[in-house]
Image 1 (cartoon, rainbow, N blue to C red):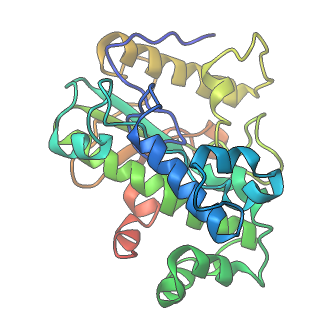
Image 2: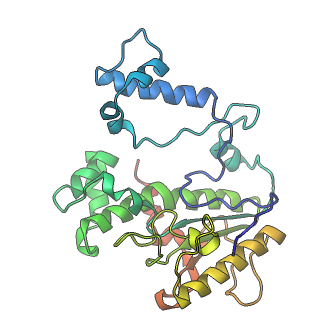
Image 3: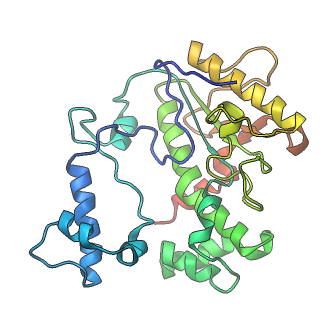
Length: 290
């Protein structure tokens, strides 16, 4: 079954650190991003001071670009399409007041594990690279290797919580001050799109909601039930601004304080149930990390 969404209610997908992104990207922010990239390349001796950022990047080899390729894309604003930062607009309530449905995947960052070659030996160093030496020990204590099956799983938890889940929680708290906001987390760790050991990684929820190029991925009986319920939630929300209806657990709108959302999993993995996303992803802890 294919989900078709109207324009009245936004449904931000996992993988976004802010609830809004701009369709137009040729703006000051992109130019700033280009200058930042040029600066990084210049430090490596790859750019001349008298050449433009565009010329520098165009001549760079793949080997030159790989060390800076993990930088996040720049939000495009200060244009006629999106005149101010989405983060500032959301915090101030300067956005179209319609209900929102917003979520992430439980192991969102697992898709990027291949970039880090995580091991017990380099786990603490990776954390220090991310938050600095002065704060690294706090993070290691919060996410000890002994609590996970592998260093890769621990690093997935750290980066999922720090980069994706807690920013989503913050966005949901801000939005909930102004509009009904329905938070969720996709938590099926055995999606047919997931590679071995990845769990509920980035984009693995797609076959539960969409027909991908006309190809139907094989779902188990419990996964198909979850898919049907998710489609019902999404389409009800698209029609009415409220995902609730018969045949599926109640989904309460979140508050501006504790972000209560729904964990979306098949019945043999805990089923659909309420979850405090801020607690699950250590968001109070991350609020104290610079």
